[in-house]
Length: 102
Image 1 (tube, helix red, strand yellow):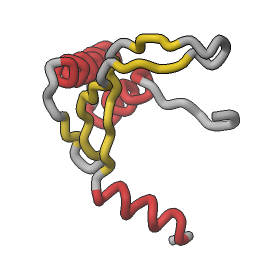
Image 2: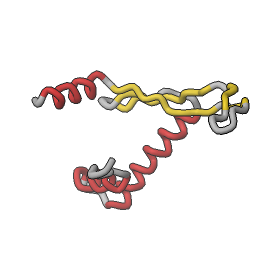
Image 3: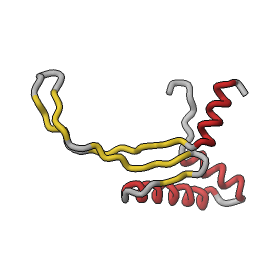
């Protein structure tokens, strides 16, 4: 990610504060509320649709056995969780237009 600017919660809070004439503190609370809600919904196994961005859902990886590459020993790998993201057709089209130079 070298050379790319990272846009975090502070950025979105500033944008909301400016666009909706809110205090930065109130806008920050709104952004934090959204983040907390999204985390809670995904943790509860719900699917979260974020408008023109796409959907997020919890993905469970089953426990399994594997091999330690250094020793060759068989090891137990516990179940784990990750987030599955599917982009929306709107975002997919925007990315396609970007690649086409439009």
